[in-house]
Image (spheres, rainbow, N blue to C red):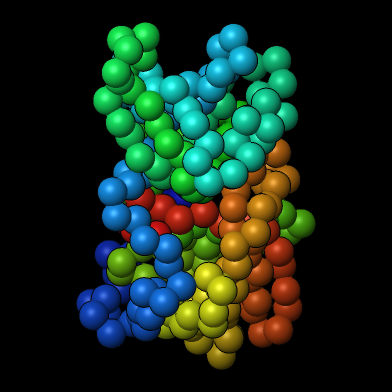
Length: 225
């Protein structure tokens, strides 16, 4: 889900990007040296798993180098479908035998989805984080300019924020507006998106004046983590 009308609101924010966030990620974030993040299609073939990047004809044989459980996750999600969307990070090596274009040594999963529509998401590269939940519906999208909080039945809010790391990969974004205290708490945890049964690997809680709504989250392309 993306909210183009809401993203347009970010242009109205003051230029607070230099002071709105507290970035202390070095201690919590694993090293990404030598690894590449890509989005594309995962497909099983004769007991092996292959990855094809969005808009790229090359196909890479997948080795699960970090015990991510990608084969089980992808097979459960795919069902009768031939492919699933994957946002992942790993080491891409050139092929040595000519049977594939190369090998992907998978290190980290960000998101799996039944639809490949996310390959064409125009907001992905601009976002550093997106989170959403249901009952009632809510979404938070974060960029370098601020965050948009969109809750069912209410007008979207475009706000500056402060980010704080709290250890073990957990962090929160907080802001105050119109007498409301708004916080988004994020933690590394497998999370099933109830809207489409896709799998994300961050759990999220939106807290507005102490009221808690739960959902899932994923890092956008603008965040190298």
